[in-house]
Length: 143
Image (tube, helix red, strand yellow):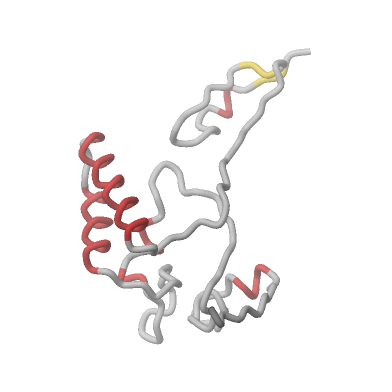
């Protein structure tokens, strides 16, 4: 296909530097980036997709470092951010996921699940779909 690749690795403070700091992940100097981060709980991080969050000289703190601006996707993110009914919001998030997939805006190279394991000596642990640490003050360890 004639596609070349130049693999580059950066220290995290350089790679994730802001647009104002000329960070390669924020200044659009890279064609493809790959990294793993923690998911936002309980909501998805919509700022990385919003048109209004694209960093620029006028708005260097923007969180959309892909530079992608799709008005349909933008409207879906804004819509889900104002929905309070669980079923409606879930449907909108499913629409967002389908839209991202159909347009190949996001192509995961691997599955990066969050897996948690606890010793059977631990008590008071309750797992939640929002965050596994919501009741951490109730955790204890038995002998």
